[in-house]
Length: 253
Image 1 (cartoon, rainbow, N blue to C red):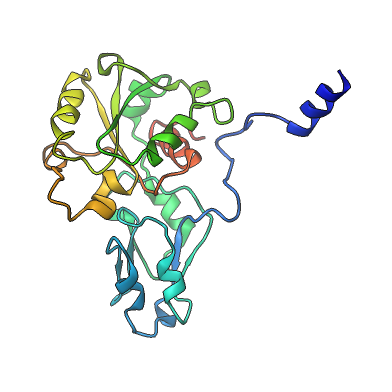
Image 2: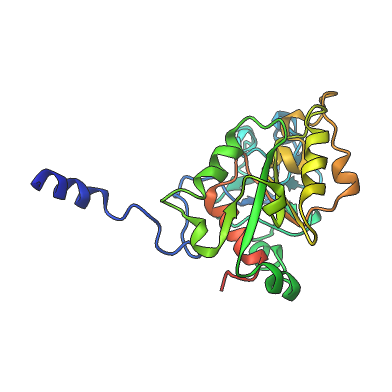
């Protein structure tokens, strides 16, 4: 009995009490800080980037392509690129994912997601999502599954993943969308009753990630269907996803 009590005391609380204000560990790679005034003009950062997320002149970094490998940090001799642990990276605009020199995490977070009154009215109390792994590596899929476990428990806010698109309010897409999965993704989207949302989670879903140049991809889905919420990462942290969705539906405050 005493051993069980000690074990329970050691574990502390097995869940995060306040998801709105929780943060990942300090070593988590989040929002990048770019310092063009420190850039030596060598282009090493752009050359080593596996997804071509970096533009050297002027210095830009596309969070929709970035896999947060930090090869650019190691390649830069002057420290012009650094990753903070600021994890609130979700945005409703694809263009906003391209960060520039001097942009702060506070400015990015403040302008990243515009909560719309209609979205809050329709989905603010309950949001059911159907997740589609469109040729993903299972990294993003595992993090999304963790968002519903006992530690994060996003279900306490009425946000859940459901088995059928007929019961869903929107689709969460992970993976770069292969040719084989393109029809399944389209059919899943069409099976969701209107009004429906589309969330792209992870670099692969947003831009194709490291597979962007592969001839095996078919990303024409995104040419026809607008994405409502982008959640970058490789994979995105559960808190990044949960807080982005909460802010999007007007439940963050």
